[in-house]
Length: 380
Image (cartoon, rainbow, N blue to C red; front, side, top):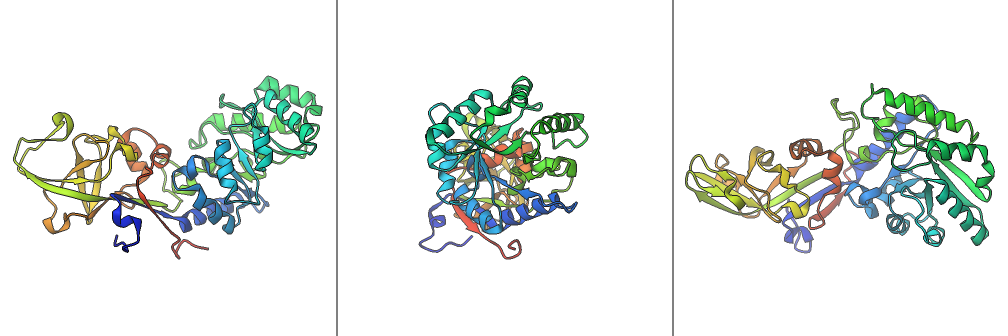
């Protein structure tokens, strides 16, 4: 983890390394999985939540260079920020059209996912006001019951196609409830509902498969794949070997080591007590950096290849680890421990924190020094 004098990692308590080549390779693998049956299916990329914590401003251009031609974000401001680095390709805002924002969408050439008739009416009015056709993405709720046209609204649209006048129907989409559970019958039920709606909109391109949905097979692929989590190394097949390359590693520096006697407590509330004379190291990471408080006494880090338990409460800025059994020459001030990476995956940390890998990734802290690499073994 050596750093040059002009490298911000030199001053950082923790260093997050993000492999853009691995993200690109994961996108290629997902695209190719969707094309396994020989159909010309396109593959988009979901870059919401700052590309799942990895940095949309870096990931977007890298995927554009790889051949990705469509992007999805959640919020309007995410779309505006992405447009600055992805100037030429469609960007869809999944949360849709908020009142008074149609001018922002038009100015930045963004497309809202239209989630109900009110948004459709507002977007059509915008097309009339700006005197130009605007792309429309229609999101149909097939069972998630969050966003999207309800069955009743979908039927109204099917019966009154004139509501789309002045708009270009760019995509029909829906979102799977339990695609990571391949045997769950709700997947087939949603597929059937989506196909039924598609029949009322002949010729419109369609998209249903998220990351895990890609692995449900060609029936779910349609015209456009929409992977998100799998791009960033999160396993789309829980319980099976992860087909994706790892993308991130996180290392935190040792700030201090100390010796304590047996039966001494460490950290707030004295939540951990030594059973023997011990050596304790304090590392520069905490819950302000997305290292969850629920990890108390439930996880570990790796130091020079050794598994080391995390002890005591997780503080805002600091974590303590028990290095009693680690050679002292490997516990020097400034040495780094692996918090996330080859030995501790996002899925591992999520299991320890009683959450999911999505939250682990999107919680990655802003105080880390971020180092971007594009390793040859993962580049095209």
